[in-house]
Length: 251
Image (cartoon, rainbow, N blue to C red; front, side):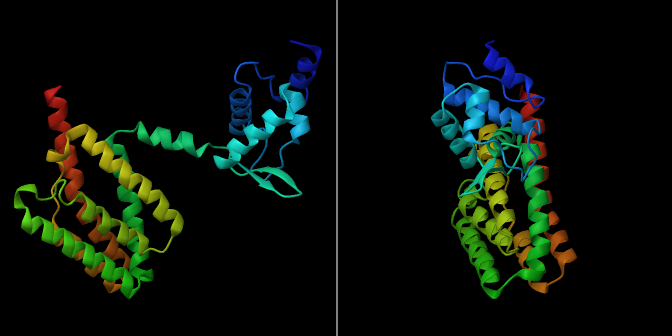
C-alpha cells in the first residue's frame, strides 16, 4: 500500500479502500456500495465530493463520477444541483430484487398475498366507479375465456386476464408505491410457478370468489374486502402447496 493509500484508509474510521486497477469503475461502484451498506453515511447525509472520493479510491474523478452516476440510477444516491450528492438508500434495490428472484414460489406467493390483502382493504375505502368497472370487465373477459376453453380453465388461457383483474384491485387502492411493488411480485409469482410446474399445472381460476371480492370492495367495508381477498387467495395457495408436495415427491 502506498503512503497515499495508507492515509486514505486510515482516516475517518472505515473510509474507502483504494480500488484496483482492473475495471476501475466497477471497483469504485463496489467500494461505494459497500460503504453505503455498512452505514458509512446515513440516509440524507451528503457524501464526500468527487475530488475527495477520487483521492480515497486513488482513481480519477471521471471514474468516481461514473460510479456515482450508476448508484444514482440504482436509487442509492441522489444528486442535487449545487448542493452535492446525498444518500437516498443504504440498500441496493437491484440486490433486493435479485434476492426475491432466488426465493421459491411459496415465499413470493405469500408476499404477494400480503400486498393484495392490504390493497383490498384500501380499495374498499378509496375505489372509484371506474375502478369497479375495470375489475368487472377483466372478470367478464376471464369468464368468457374459461367458457370458451373449458379444457384450459384457470391455466395459461386465463393468465393475462387474471393478472389484469388482480392488478385492477391493487390499483384501486390508489397507492402508486404499492402498485409498483405488486407488479413486480405478480410477475415473479407467475414466472416462478411456470418454472416450477409448467403452464399445464397452473392453479385453476374460480370466478365466483373473484366476483365476491369485487362486491366486498364495492360495499366499502375494509374488513369484508380483506376477508374476501384472503378467501380468494386461499384457493391458489392451497393448489400451490399441493403442487409443491407432488413435485417434491417426484424428486
